[in-house]
Image 1 (cartoon, rainbow, N blue to C red):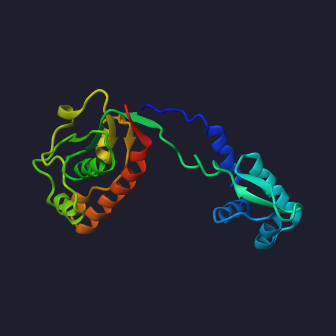
Image 2 (cartoon, helix red, strand yellow):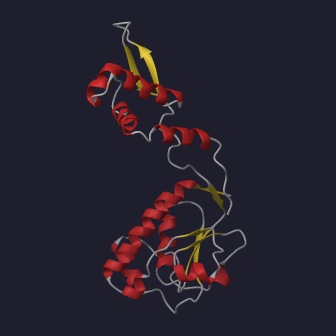
Image 3 (cartoon, rainbow, N blue to C red):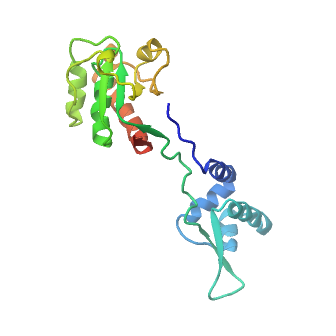
Amino acid sequence: MNVEQMPDVTARAARHAALGDPSRLHIIDLLTLGDLSPSEIRAVLGLSSNLVAHHLNVLESVGMVERSRSEADKRRSYVHLTEVALAGLLPGRTERASRVLFVCTANSARSQLAAALWATRSDIPVASGGTHPAARVSPGAVAVAERHALALSDVTPRPLDAVRGESDFVITVCDNAHEELGVAGDLHWSIPDPVRIGTDVAFDSAYDELERRISELAPRLASR
């Protein structure tokens, strides 16, 4: 796995630590809507002035808030979020890939759906394969793809050995395939096999989980 270390991880950790206090998190929530004076913050939170001052000092020390003097009453100040207050709190782009390869056992449902979904979310090439490919794509997978207006990009199950390249970023979407490969992939998503259950609900659940994970991963995966 090609993991790039985030250069600002220490700063991110400090901001997360600062937000670990409910009152400070509440202050940040308030400031996302507008600027407030310390006395206004005190009124909303119901805290003493010295405790509000402490919380603001902590948030200021990690670069999340700034204070400016009121142009009207010079004795008054307003607190506002800095431009980078919320930047980087969620993980950024941490991986690179020349091609993404989704793998399950039969290459008849989960990996096929994943590859088709990936093509709608990223320009990085994608393929799919199976450790023991079935003769055809599951009708349930075809049906759920049609329900979501998703075109299956590869309608013929293929063996993993025939499609896998040395530089592929491998994502197993099947526990059996993951364990059979000896945990050799880059990522593993433990998604229940909808073919085994066979219901529309099972296929919809697998589709929704794949869509969620792909939507989260695609912005974090850079082309290599």
